[in-house]
Image (cartoon, rainbow, N blue to C red; front, side, top):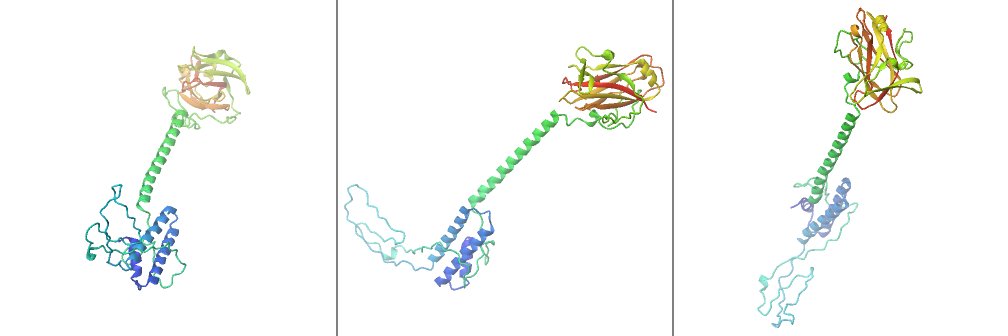
Length: 381
């Protein structure tokens, strides 16, 4: 016995089930309970609601048939002549659904009445619409789970549950694949644009500790080589000129590198471009300049910007002869003219010769160029 039938039968047991008027009120109450359950569950589709109503209607028809009298056992007998039709096939006999089938004997004795089938006439139950109030009818709640003495639950049918169960995994799979594809594209873009370059490689923070020339393989601490903002350097310092585009004779470029003087919106500039081998362009640091720096703490300032539309990363190496070097520096150079600083503590000795500052315009060897406006140095007090 399913939940709907059990709920209706429980309601019939609470009154006089032999009274047709009482049964009709129970049936109407069942339809009203179903409508309340459907309205409380907006996810139920129209097709499912129609199926629920038909299911209740079929149960009501089945239950109501139990209260109708059985068809009388007397069945008429009909003798049929032996002659067959010309076609050789027996004629068809169509029997309506509302008329009980009589016992038919062909050229033989009639079937005893006691052996004739007994049947009931199934009532035709119309599509009963629920009433607002049903006086005298027990309440039926289709929203609760079915149990003895409880009401029936209106649950989606098996096909709907199967379709809904298949729909959820497909949606989850589609969402997961889309999310993974988006993450993959993001990671690929980040790798291509250099987002994952380490901070130690870029060195974009302000200076913390001055490097010493005694450390041949010195790697500056994080932030030791951060460029200052334009105009952020102390203008009151006594700057010593190391290079100016007005005198490019103190610049040496290897065979696969370029260095040429040109003009941009800021004035005269030396555009340098390292070759495919990653070779650097060397800027002379005169011996006289190094003699002034011996035994002092000096700050070098490279004023530069990247070529239009091509941000790059430059690397800087120094060779100051007897005074050592400056360690390798690396900077991210953008579209704006900026100052890239590094400091050196020079030993107190005679330099003996001139030195050089070597600049690689593109650490990634993609042929990007950098505009050099000036290289200068000042002595810290």
